Image 1 (cartoon, rainbow, N blue to C red):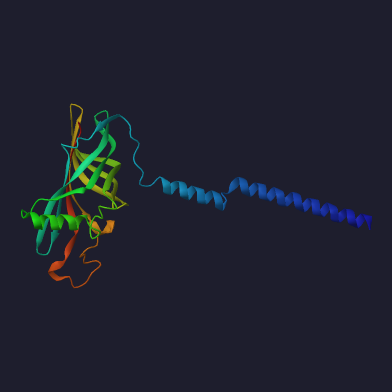
Image 2: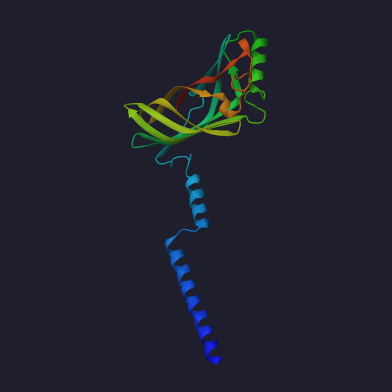
Length: 227
């Protein structure tokens, strides 16, 4: 019985050593599920981030910068402005390296309607929850995440546009001039308003609108200048 007990003891010890050795090898050569999750989360956090802001900071001129908008509908169109209320661009070796600017939607103006009562009616409607929900979300923002020089002063700018608290990545063409350390940037592009939960009279969400339909896309013209 003593010999049999000793054999069983040695068998258990040997099995334990083999098993422990196998676990040690696996942990050294494979990534466990927890590590894989951490890698995925890390990769996700690198998306849509601002590019590193290097170089000299240039403040955006509030008085010399503007955003113009145009919205179309079946029976016509309206246009106006929204104030750019600050921001900065970064320049290094005469090249833009990053930047951002703020948009104050409480300053929405309608320029094509001369009658004061009709103008105020549309302006207030644009500030309502049908459109920009200005009381809840007065400020918007654009934050550059990438710049690509296409040729000469022509660039392709990618960044996060935040409207109504919703952040969406967009890419648009722009022309950038740098003269005596001052930056001037111009852009003309369309965006789909429904991406920012602006669905009023959108053909994507409502049927049989007829001549009350409003285009999902509206045009933005940017003119940004630094001090």
